[in-house]
Image 1 (spheres, rainbow, N blue to C red):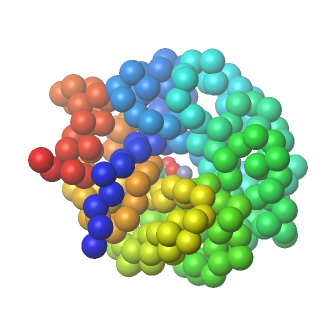
Image 2: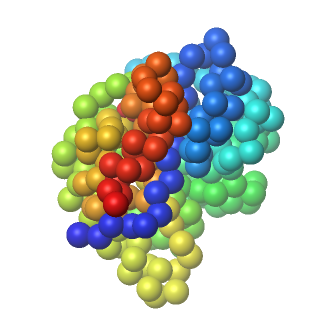
Image 3: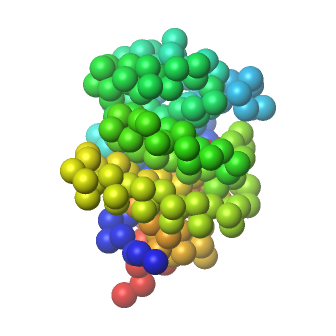
Length: 232
Ligand code: DX5
Ligand code: ZN
């Protein structure tokens, strides 16, 4: 068991008020988050439809923190350049949605973005084995992709420990740093075990945007998540 001192919080704007998106992303940055998590769904790879490069471009001037684009689309290669141009900082995709995973990862990096693979709850870790040197991020889904507000799937915890060990071994052998992000059902009551299992970056959608009227607003939620992850 390992508790990383680093904790990046990435609110998913899937649960934000889309009618006031500029205001919402400015508010989460001011509240102390580290990344804007941007969920792209195509009603093909996942049974839901969300936002595309035009919306990424529209919010880019409103924040200075990185935009973490999570592609839940199939195929991926044609949309990657559009997001790079729209100001994405990190682009992750599901390996099942690309015919040539190595090529898609290289394409993201050639366009100046950080690249990552997203593994669904039932996806094997083997996807990582031959592309570790091309990854800046591994994103483990702790729900099945497509919707916010779902329940955290507990089998993500042992899977996280395995990925943490893989990344640590890779870095110990001289490899580049790789961020380990978790997405789905992250709340104050489970973030501690998620971080202890090895995550350094946590997506939180409903936990952040569902609490805007609570004491302290978004800042209060962000502080509560950090305190719960690393109690003094
Ligand atoms: C699900 C998305 C998640 C989701 C997280 O497909 O990738 O980013 O919005 O939302 P919560 O934190 O509410 O589970
Ligand atoms: Zn996501």
